[in-house]
Amino acid sequence: MAKVTLDSGSVDKLGVLLAQIADLTKQADAIKDAIKEDASAGGATMIEGNLFKATYSESDRKVFDKDAYIKFNSQSSYEGYLKVSAVFSVKVTSR
Image 1: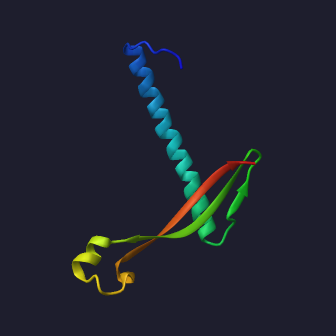
Image 2: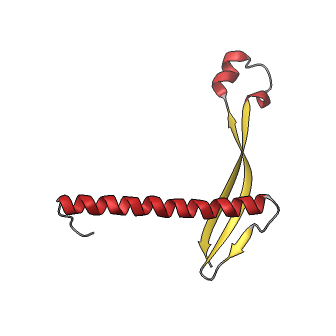
Image 3: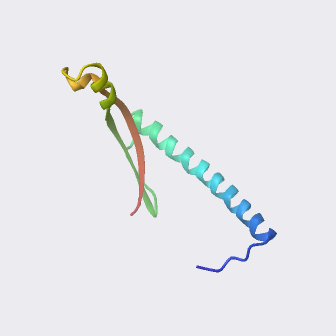
């Protein structure tokens, strides 16, 4: 790794780099959101480019609230203490 000399130029360069990262992240998120919207509406769940492939997936995430289970009624079924939320993701890999 290159040695970095700390001066006002380094701080400015850091600021520019962080701004570029934020902009690129927004662009990537917008593309992912478009893929998610299209796929969840019945479109393609896999899209291939020349270099990369994007795959859309859906799943349910279940989280058990053990504290509420213990506090309110540990004798009943645990099913009432599961919080289920949908998870949508886009994975990008090389072809």
